[in-house]
Length: 246
Image: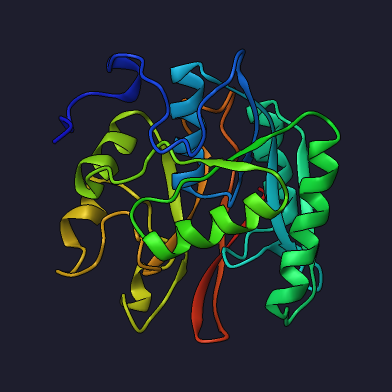
């Protein structure tokens, strides 16, 4: 188990775990599948620390009707502020609402084709342990001639959650599945106090879909993204805590 007292920067540099193809020479050129949340942010941090991957941009699915990050419900202005602080260009994959899966897959394929023309060959994901999700991603990437990098794969999620916090990650819960976690957790800060009160059976990183986050600061940011808490609303069986730029 990784010690929860050490930050990522204090650990020895290592190559990204879960890379699905070997590097043939030089650094891999990759996009990060950027959800605006903690796992994507920490995956970016890990590959930057390891040095074997050249991250050249962020790839984010945005629901056109709401002008928000899909599933997380984060406003585009905050997404843009994240990209500016990270210092990477942002590629939006715009989808309708509701969105049939085949429409999503075509939109993603188009974005990957555009990236391939710029010499990008890989996509970095923050997935932790859901094998079916990883298999789906890898199948879609393979059709586009891409491969995946999964630097957080099969990390102990309790240790990982504490490591993220110790590294200075500032994240807020922006979406809760109330069938898995009480709606009162929407809007809370992802910190040690929160981890201490998560009910038994809830993954500390929310990997089973219990909750999703927005990252406002961390070692992957040049400066914090200022946010203020907005309203909490329920939509499509999920509870969303809106964040606004102050």
